[in-house]
Amino acid sequence: MRAVEQAILHADWLRRSPAAAGGRGGHKEWMHFCVYAPAVDVLVNFSVLDDVRPTRARHDELARVTLLVRDGGWVGEVTRYPREQVQIEGGRVAARFGPNAVRFADGRYAVAARFRDRPIAIDVTLRPVTMPSIVNNVRVGDGPPINWLVVPRLVASGRITIADRVHPVDGALAYHDHNWGHFGWGRDFAWEWGYGLPDDPANPWSLVFVRLSDRAHSRCMMQGVFLWNGPREQCVFRDRDLRVRHVGFLRPARICKVPAVMALAHPEHATAIPRELRIDGAVDGNVIEATFRGAEVAQVIVPNDRDFGVTVINEVSGRLAVRGVVRGEQFAIDGRAVFEFLGA
Image (cartoon, rainbow, N blue to C red):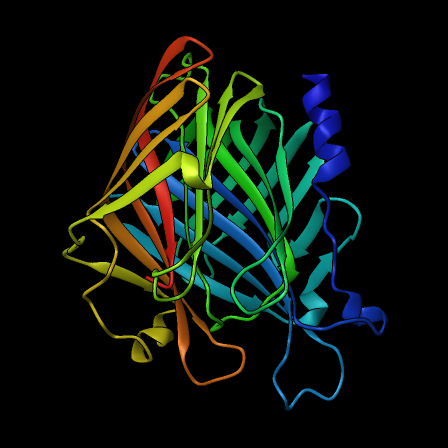
């Protein structure tokens, strides 16, 4: 896996905002991890963004950690950390936000995160076993482009502590992506993003799905399905290769909203999240059929940058079933998944 480590070192590093040196403001960057531990899903997001509020007289940044844990239902927190509690090293993966930290060293990500107000903590190391895929300069609606890097499969070890229960993590599968660029919450764009890993870790196939559209979901700007077999990306279905359909609406009995105070700005319980997301694709003799069935929802509610509205990021846990043929080989993925619907 030396080649994977070298690819990570080359591509996955914190870009940082050019505004600190007098450049363009409005930069956003985050590192996102999801761990599928036995009976527990964990989502950790480290984000740093330029503070674009008009009351700010100089360049400043907002540093936040979003932590969601699904243990019989989602619970979560979004915690902001002041400048004096934040250390970020540009040019590498090394950041500390209060007691939370992420670092890449010796071929592994180390992630430590804990709730501020609940006895829940995550301490894991994540060893990437697939090559990263990086996509630059993707236009989103009426704004400048964004960039992302994805590592669809990592192997996690460590522990998850929930009150007096310790969940050992040994060989659990995990996911990572890294996004950065200049774009504003509340602009005319939305996305659907998902990743699929099999229940059986011996199954070598991994999947990432992305679809960017306008906020009304009436115009698709780009879409793709990326497939890995073992460490290497094997096939990409793009744009006209794919047909994506929404079936019904998900009506969860409960929605976890974070930060909790933002539920006052977005109290709605009904959602436009599909009950099922179906994907069919064909290109050059390769075919895919995939169905994601949502179950439980956590909403991360973000204030818009330039108006008094909010952007809702729906994190939806469920099951993904995939069947297909790539390069003459039949494959299948059946497993837990978390799909993200922004603006839904």
